Amino acid sequence: MNISYEGVGYLAVTMPTNGCDEGHVCGINFEGKVASCPAGEMFFGVVVTTDGHRAHVQVEGFAKVTYTGSELVPGLMKLETDGYGGIRVSDDGRVYLVAAVDTEAKTAVIKL
Image 1 (cartoon, one colour):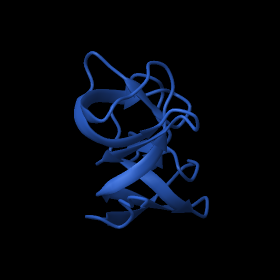
Image 2 (image 1 turned 180 degrees about the horizontal axis):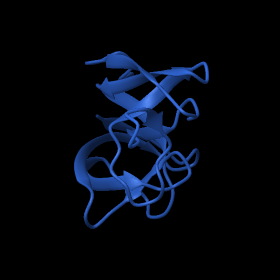
Image 3 (image 1 turned 135 degrees about the vertical axis):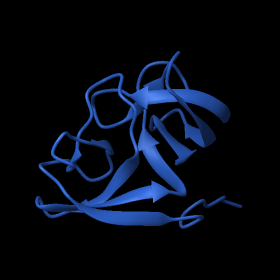
């Protein structure tokens, strides 16, 4: 039996953007627009869709994201942006629940 976290606690907002990619974690820039994050930053959501002017961003619930660096494990972990649209383990990042990890695909399901 497969386990699905899709849609659990899902909450999203639509905001202006100056460029970000679908499936990437994101932040807000100094103009108040959704933007890609450099490495080592905190993030507030995951871009679900974008048309180049607006982005639909998931801000709560379980989301699948890519990761780099150290292997993630299920449980509570400190995470930050990796600079490539994904996440990585951090000594100083915010604590997130990592619900599932696919080490072959380098993806994780985290609770935002």
